[in-house]
Image 1 (spheres, each protein chain N blue to C red):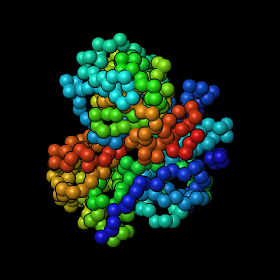
Image 2: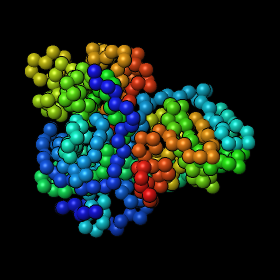
Image 3: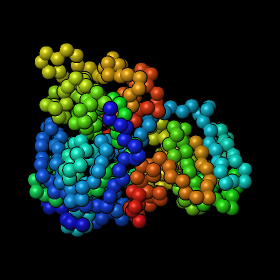
Image 4: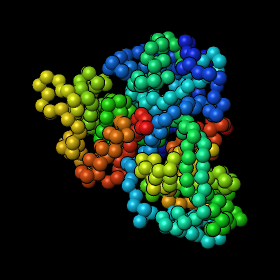
Amino acid sequence: MTAVVRGRAPHPGPWQTARVTGIRRETPTAKSFTLTLSEPRAFWPGQHMIVRLTAPDGYRAQRSYSIASAPSGAAELDLTVELLPDGEVSRFLHDAVEVGDVLDVRGPIGGHFAWDLRPALGVAGGSGIVPLMSMLRHARALGEPDLFRLVVSVRGPEDLYYAAEVRGPETSIAFTRAVPDGYARPPGRLTAEDLAAALDPDRELYVCGSTAFCDAATRLAETAGVPTGRIRVERFGVTG
Amino acid sequence: MALTRGFSGRSRGPQDTRLPPGQYDAGAAWPVLHVESTPSIDTARWTFEVDGLVDTPVRWSWEEIRALPGSRYEGAIHCVTTWSKFGMRFDGVSVDTLLDIAGVGADAAFALARSHTGYTTNLPLDDLTGGKAWVVWDVDGEPLQDIHGGPARLLVPHLYFWKSAKWVSGLTLLAEDRQGFWERNGYHDHGDPWREQRYQGDR
């Protein structure tokens, strides 16, 4: 048995520099960036980092991006960045940043959504998979894949992040619009049945995605009898 | 720190002096960020209390608090996730009005705000008094939606917006600072956006 991690998720250190040591395309609108930190920091799955860009006139823009890789003790971590319409920072990262570039970063941030290794179920909508992928990778790396199960809701196969890696006995994927050839589940929104297959009474729930997705998934889980206090939610994106 | 190779930022005029450092103008969007499932709170069961170091603990019902003299805030709000939003109009009651009714105790120096969801956040009492804080139920003339903290939320617009507790249910006045939810999770005890007090350790 892996012991539950005691204490609190690590707090952010000061700003530091990180070198981009790898860039990988996940989907047409998502890229993962491997950063090598100048000052390695411990983190828990579910935490995020801030990336700050500075222009010659002093103008700055900073955004938070979830860590996708598992804690390893190494100086490297992966951030997956979704390209947002009119996204000042995500557009720059996607279009201009190359391996070898140096970025200002700070973190890890966030304690509430950090995973303490209690048996959990992640429920991801689209890009909301990123922090949950850190949890999945961590459970697998610990040799206890059933510690973390994952249900992903995504429009179609080309929208699935980490497609080659995510599939496994502890994960299930609900395609909402288009399914791969031969896929048993017909396309459609996440249902109570999708969750029920992965739920058991003692699991913590980590829900991440758009506000609409999070509210829908939370209602499904509450209807299935999961106590509200056991559901943690991280909302991505904006509403009008 | 270092310049970012190739970064000039989106086209812009002179730096907007209304924006605290590190913030951007969210325009018409009002981003939503909270960690609980969104509750739906019936105003028939809604209450708001002021307790702790006060002369008389007071509890208001929905009808009672709305019968108090109204107060309006017009201006900006700033979220620690770096968006700011201008030209907001909130209507509710000034926290000064609520504290005057309860009577602030001589030793009170801090407050812990709490929500119907169990969320908490801590503030120095000075940041809640002097016309700087409200309990609000209307935004731009419409009832506050539940995703934005309706039926009523705390509004402390000169601090980062996590201090403006959604679904607010009360204030406890304290002699010493007691950390709330995000503050225990690494966020700053004060949270002044003009000083970029985002995280524990920021000055």
